[in-house]
Length: 221
Length: 208
Image (cartoon, rainbow over all chains, first blue to last red; front, side, top):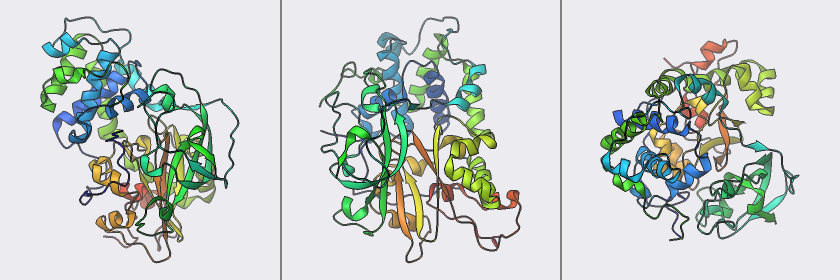
């Protein structure tokens, strides 16, 4: 299947252009509004980060859209999906005035909510793997719960063998949570792979890439 | 293409395609429906344009350089160490600090989207979110480093951390030589944003 967001290892891109140090500056004025509007709408609490990532991934023109264009397109899709905005309102570019909803992310909620974030650590099953264990990732990198669904195993790391180097406890499982199938927490590990085991033309074979991987992506190797 | 429900019709195509017009239309709709508070948008912008940025990560790194007990605590439980400096929040709920050594240089990417430790470094710079960085950092990190002016010494391996979950990585660069006895404010001025992503190195002690 086509996974335009799964960019790791793709060839054909030009150089990376560094930017000045310090707080990143918006490249266009509308970027500021896109950032603030997306976070303010996210603060309503109608969707999870997993759902919003997946809706971005489903954009048919993902590869053509810039970063904040992806945010805006996905925001519109999420608002309609969750019944907060109608297609007629999007088409008209306006909506009937209404008082501020009790669900709205009001100014006084912002600082505490941003400081709190959304921790993803959960109680869950004991880990099957220990640091130092050799593991193999499953292949192909496809969601086992929803055909074509959200998954956080990049294609370049599918079917590869690495070593567990960190164990993070149980985290919310995006493959289910993005589809309303529950948080279903699983043990999460950081797994290190040798470049030579990922790429046929490794730049420097002893270099490593690590990925954060849920237990059901892994089998003993 | 396999799809789950609700997106075959892609509601966003009803909006203007020009992004400046699109964001204005969405803002108008959400504010007039009472779903978005314009004052909240101002607080969000004030937070990420003036308050939260790489100076926070730099303070953490400087303290780790100056205080071995803090460095050990940071390595053991980064979020608890961050709390000691009043740092916490969205996109930094589960932080792991990874320390550069003469043997290993660390570098962070998110190939699947653009995950980044916001409470420590702020909004990611454009290049971090670019297709080129996401594609190339895992395959040819040394070529990418060269584009940032970084050439690693022979014998130092590269470990690239692809942030595929809600764990966020902060690189602790090596303390520059010649900074013995420096206080944390002076040390923090050497710590660049890119040195905490791993695409840069801190300023040397004798930088102008």
